[in-house]
Image (cartoon, rainbow, N blue to C red):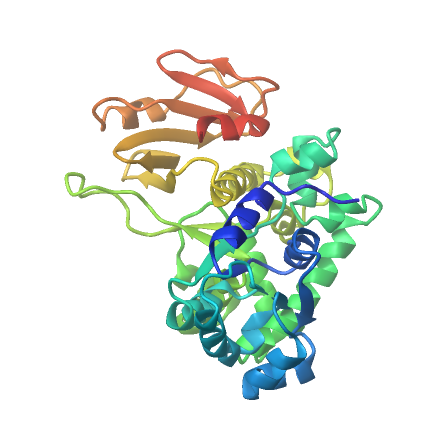
Length: 386
């Protein structure tokens, strides 16, 4: 079963206008399946194979002679030297677009190589897990609670018989053994798994590296390195605060969010819908799910908003969207029937004119709350971004 992705027309458009398209994202988000489906006439090679990666890095001319364009190169981060050689290949036939489609699961390193070698020649896109909108297209019977627990990894919806808990157990073990050991000197994998679980318990909270390090029993510098590795690999995101020069008391620390609610729920120990409804942590998990939905929709160019959050010593808005001087405020509420906008009214007074407000909740259909405020279900998030 193929699940149609909202990013598909964006990828095809970039391939029509750029010689190189780079698709980044965490493991198992469907990068390889997507590019092979969209570009069936391209040759394909994966640098997961050590022999291919070695030749691509040490002898890129011979590598490209064996794998001529048009070409898909999977996991290109294993051969950064290939990017420098691709620049010459592209410049020799500058008017031919879509010749090279590259994928990689370590976006920061890959972006650095692209910036150095393929500036002006490559379009860079990011593929996350399935948004709730995409899940409903494929499995319209999926409830919000079920989507929270299964997350957005496509395989869990292509094959609904897969046990989500077993999937995440394997994902964590594979990620620890494969990706992290290639990036960091992790002396104790058990410490790192405890660190992952500590991060999950802090999703939707302000980042405090010192507290996390103390709880796990590692140094603050190690905590910083591990957080950076998790962010580079697409497991975590740091949502930055919004502030202006005229408001000096706003916090400067980012908020920690997992990129997948299902992985976060697994690390929290939530395995069933009853666990969700009984847990005091469900509010933070819901906020993270709303974050991932907004983040994924913006990544496929639904709207051109910038996403942040707003917080000072006494007031907080979970999300602040800004675009060309326009502001929108939103809060995530684990309720089916919000009765009002609560704390957001006080924040609206900070802006002139007062921005619209959305309460993102588990209601079945959108409805007005008065005073330019709306209650919205998760499936309608895209309506406020266009």
